[in-house]
Image 1 (cartoon, helix red, strand yellow):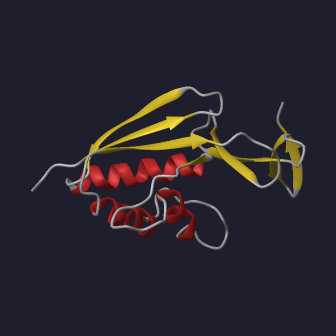
Image 2 (cartoon, rainbow, N blue to C red; image 1 turned 180 degrees about the vertical axis):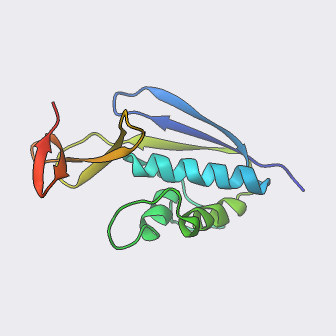
Length: 144
């Protein structure tokens, strides 16, 4: 079996390049780890223009969004979503770098998760004028 290495790289909105690791995707465990990282990057507002293999014009970003469900919340532990991304990774036939870029926030309909000190996570949204807030009890609580 030929080894195929996927290098995940993310670029933040300020242009900083972050290396997210190398994955030998012909190994099932590593392919699932790579899929989880792709889902995590997409969940946190990164997008990619890298297309999935076999001549499709669909990106990995599109695959995650199509499979995320009705509520627009990404479940990184969801086995169906991980399997879907992993299935597309299996079709990769050459070493490559998948680049995920963090879009600049221009307000409205943008979301990100932040880790809480208590170990959980909170969904932050961006208002129409760029303010960050989270919902609690049906009210917007803005973050400074």
